[in-house]
Image 1 (tube, rainbow, N blue to C red):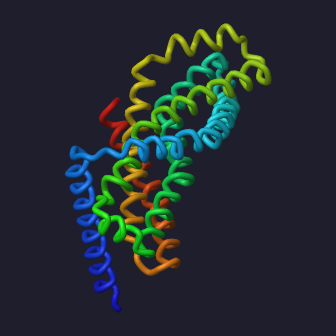
Image 2 (cartoon, one colour; image 1 turned 60 degrees about the vertical axis):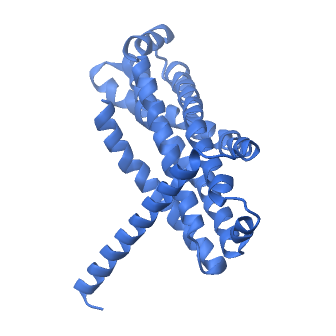
Image 3 (tube, helix red, strand yellow; image 1 turned 180 degrees about the vertical axis):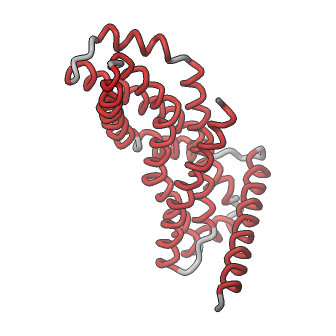
Length: 255
């Protein structure tokens, strides 16, 4: 295979995959507004994606806030503006770090699980069995996961932001000895509700991205156990890169 043939096949494969994903999304929208609604499956996925991801999100948020305070203090101390450590860290968490890092953590934990579970059902013909039993696999497997991810991601982002600010406060006030009154006053002065809401909007989009990609890669799995492993790997990589790309465009639109 020469170089130009490789480029051509890569481009063809990319557009075929993109077209398959677009058709997958159209089927989701088609079945989204049609009964029945599997409420039990929806709440089960909310618990799996949201509640079970809270521990890793809290741990990541705590240390993200702590290390952000250390790094920003080093920079601000060069020109005597240590009082801005709290507000800078809070803005960074609310606008960017909170939604992005929370989404990446959920992608690694829940997104990969979605792909592996649905992929295993696909290669063992369990999805075909659902169809034979007159249960639509999109309504039963896909839609509850996507809706749960869109709802739970903003809540996980709130947890991330809250514990991140607490970690920033602990490092800034207790370790770096910044006056706690000034620390909190600068946060109140420079951080607004629009910063919080824009981060939550991003989180909802990221939840849609990670769940759609995870379900799509699982639904299109072939090749037995090896295929499930490949689909899970591709799902995490594609979701993570897509989240970072979407973050740029959402930031350009919202700010």
